[in-house]
Image 1 (tube, rainbow, N blue to C red):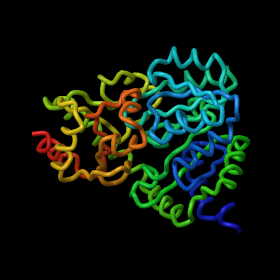
Image 2 (image 1 turned 45 degrees about the vertical axis):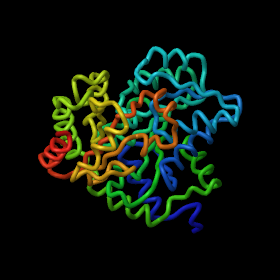
Image 3 (image 1 turned 30 degrees about the vertical axis):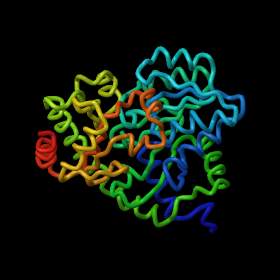
Image 4 (image 1 turned 180 degrees about the vertical axis):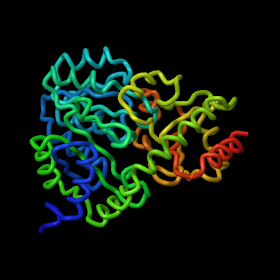
Length: 337
């Protein structure tokens, strides 16, 4: 066995995610970005076209605006919630339709079934990043997607101690990604696979608690006078709440919110006052993690690029952990006071 090609522990991890997503096959990479880039470069060639949304994870966005154009791939990024615009761009022709729902960090939701149908009518391969939802809350393959991927570093592992990425789908689509990853060398380490497998033993328990706590926290923040706006698909005020209810079994542990004082300085003043939430770039762990996209998920992007993606400077991303929700709410209350 040559480690870059295959490993029993890595295969066991892939099999577990495959079963959770109801897929025929799965393959992994050393990080979430490793699997995202492997998938995109597997199916795109010079002269091809990819349609996606503006609100993707910062690293994914960098591939779209910086790297793919260098290889003469046309990239069309659409308004995440304007389904008519997305369908119109798909109808012009594309080889890949890449979606993320809910999105990082604005937690926007797209109608996966509707867009997957449009993608297939155009002959596109439909790829969905399901990191924020997890297989516990949403299964994109059942909604029509061809491939579903995760940054396993986040909720799947759940303990902020292992990096990994995984993608699932039909064998005929997964195998070419495996061979590309085999050559680019972004191999998942067996020890990381072991830690991810260990973390996934409690995935359902963790996610159900995070779903419940995030909903209560979102409701608290929405009613707070120092908070301008809360982004959480479980709230009726969310612009795509109806779609989220239709395609998700739970609304996830991720939310984001804006302070009334719309400045990065206000965020920098607020964060140190939190006692339970950890300021970090990760998310999806048992500990509550908080941070502005400007220094976490979208640190690779310029201020202008973040603004174009609809990410205000005062936005705070909040990854709900499994701590007692009353403690977390009390902590937010005193920090906002």
